Structure formats: C-alpha cells, structure tokens
Image (cartoon, rainbow, N blue to C red; front, side, top):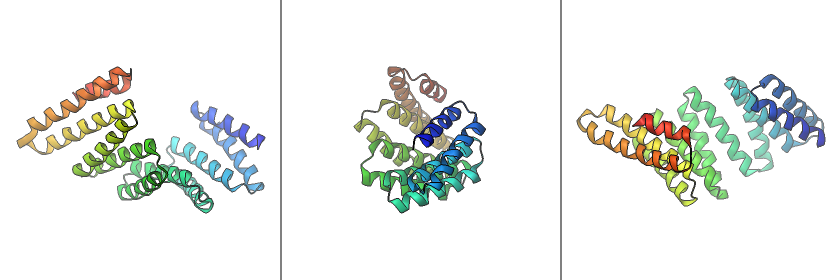
Length: 219
C-alpha cells in the first residue's frame, strides 16, 4: 500500500509538471504491484490514472482503452461514484473526437448515477458538458436547457464560478443562434450581451480573470 501510494503521488507530481513519460512510469509501477496483489480497486484507479496521462498526450485510443478497463473494474465492485467518473472521462474523449452520440450516452450515464448519489456539483458540471455537446450538434434548445439546469444547480449550491461560466455558455449559444437567424439577430445579440455582462460581473466579483476575459471577448 505504501509503495503504490508513493508511486501514485510521484506520478501525480510529474503529471502536473506535464512530464508525462515519467508520470506513466510511476503509475504503471503502481499498476504492476496492484495486479500482483489482486487489488481490483487499486487496479481500477491505476487504469484511470494511465487514461489521464494518455488523454493529456492526445492519445485518445489508449486513454479510452484504460478508462474502459477502469470502468469494468469499478462496475464489478459497484463503486458508483467512480463509475460515474469513468463515464465522464470516456465522454470527454468522445467529445474531443467529435463522436457526439457516444459522448452523450456516457455523459447521461454518468449524470444518472450522480443524481442517484446526490452529487450536485458533479451534476452541474456534467449538465454543462452535455450542453456543450448539444451546442456542437447545433441543437440549441437542448443546449440552453442543460446550461440552464447547470446554472440552477450552481445557484443552489452557491458556486459563483459555475454561475459565471453558465452565463458565458448561454451568451455563446445566443451568439450562434443570432448568426443563423439574421431576421432576429439584433434581439439575439442583445440577449447574448446581457448574459456575458452578468457573467462578467460575477467573475469580477470572485476575481476570476480568465472568465472575465471570456465574458469580455463575448461582448
């Protein structure tokens, strides 16, 4: 247990430093020990960590391969929270690859478990990701619905960063709708500016300069 924890911690540091080969070496060392010890839960965590490394390197096929191994083990152990995380990770890759139907399936599978567990912060993040997938699919009504659901939960748990992010997402949606609807473009652009302005105010309030910049670009 001590050796694997140390290897995981060192791997985590290398991952943060973007030294992915070194991170892989230490995460793989933990995996080898856990396989020998038949530690299914630990093996799942190791596969998940390796998936993160491959994702960070842009090797999506290897990332999915490891996330699926983690998912299979988590499901066998009925580790519900971890199952939801695995679905989220898999969905993120499919979203990057433009495989939006697969991304939606995995995000919706994740959010179903998150709702069952009452994990409100995780739910609002997944709602936001679902909204982004629908935005890519040009299904703006569904995108607005999920961004709004995300924002409602953010207000409920008083997560101001997520509230500001939701306003920016909604502003972005109305910009896209305006571009496709010239007859009502002025109204829609004004609606977008309204959301971006609300996002800017909240992000300035919490000192989130990155999201202030996003709000200002939108405006």
